[in-house]
Image (cartoon, rainbow, N blue to C red; front, side, top):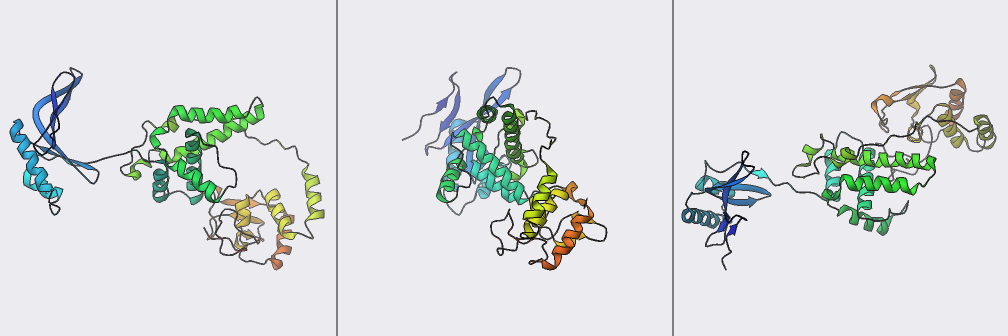
Length: 361
């Protein structure tokens, strides 16, 4: 059965259908002076192929335009005839350049594409950004955060639900609501509220990295919210992060000497490197002997085959007390898994080469 033609509210024809039931559009343009769309006596036949739209300019006479549209449709109904061949045959000079059809992706699609194209960031950063976006998306779906350490089917089910959320649902209103929920959960305790603000800022900042302008061209035909909702909500002011120690370091060092130095030398060395050299856990676990300069009393934090510093300005030397190097010197003959200073698995990588050898980054 033939479809009915389409008219606007003023009774003007905006689309009619041919004998084959193909829709033909009436050409229109936006009149700035009158502030409305103006329909002209000119017809266009639209064809979709591989998420792209192709427009054929037709005759200005309705009957002839309908015949032309049916001829194009009949030609394209033959599987061996391509859209390029139709353009060359029917309207080589009038066909507009095809434009990609954009669409709003799901959270799962966006994260997968981000992981594939964000080659300028580390895998750890990708993991943090993806996790933050999923955490926010879970809130938008009003899902409870999965239990810490949850694995297997519980985590898989939660991720499937979160990954199905359309990115268009991530709005400034929802982000503000997410942030407010974290702060509200902290109650009236000002210390907890301060921590909640830091946590909320971190989630929004990390998830927002997926939406930054330099990433958008890499996503192809994805249509992301514009303007960016993460930029709209911004960051809340945080309390000063200066650490005020309330710990008796002397007592801790004394206890470590008594309890660890003799019976647990590995743990004692890790304690010394973290306290006196200020090394992070990842830096300690991946520290190799080539980074230890015994002669000049330096520990060099730099890129190795097994480790990359968190930021470029993190590459530097660490000057330590002489006692630290004496402890390292005494420990070196007993080191059991060179080139690493300490034995043990990599805390960041779950698939280690062996229980004692971290997976190289």
